[in-house]
Amino acid sequence: MASTQVNPTRMELTKQKKKLVTAVRGHKLLKDKRDELMRQFLELVRENMELRLKVEAGIRSANTNFVIAKAGMSEETLNTALMAPKQEVFLDTDKKNVMSVDIPVFEYKTRTADANDIYSYGFAFTSSDLDGAVKSLADVLPDMLRLAEVEKACQLMSAEIEKTRRRVNALEHVIIPEAQRNIKYITMKLDENERSTQIRLMKVKDMMLEEAHHYKERPAREA
Image (cartoon, helix red, strand yellow):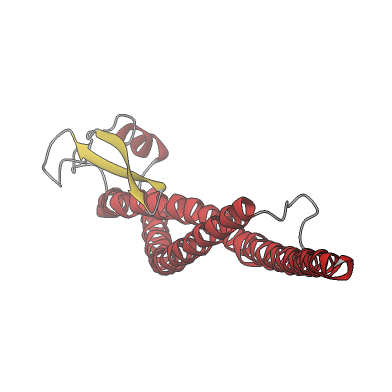
């Protein structure tokens, strides 16, 4: 049923037709956006699962090596070896826009470019298991940062998909049908008014013809 606030005028009919055209175009654009967001979201989810498995495997390997190193070294020697880090990591944060979603981007660089410049201790009094543990943690760092990027991107894109889905549903089930009902209602009212006007004009014409006929007959009778 059409809204009671709609005035059945030609101006309102033109307004409702423009509203319908805009709503249909917006519905198509939002639907395309939702589909593209879903495609990219699913790709990120798959990457997220792979990265999480890889990061968890790297952390487990590092923990295993630390446990083995701790078993073969004294606690004092282990604490002294790991007391001060050798390498420094500098993290830069940025963002990129994907389908109107600002996704974070992490970039990092180390103080030195040497990949082996991560051991803050000498090798004379430490075990090779400790070297493996430190190397495992250093190797897993890029994947951890990428995992953080992907997980945050998944959260943001999921929220945007839900927002876009609600807008698509509102256009599809509320705004577009309402505009169509209003257009139908106004068109019917205008047609009805036009028929009523034609009927009134025909009656007025008949009355005028009848009056003209009586006017002509009156002089004839007098003669």
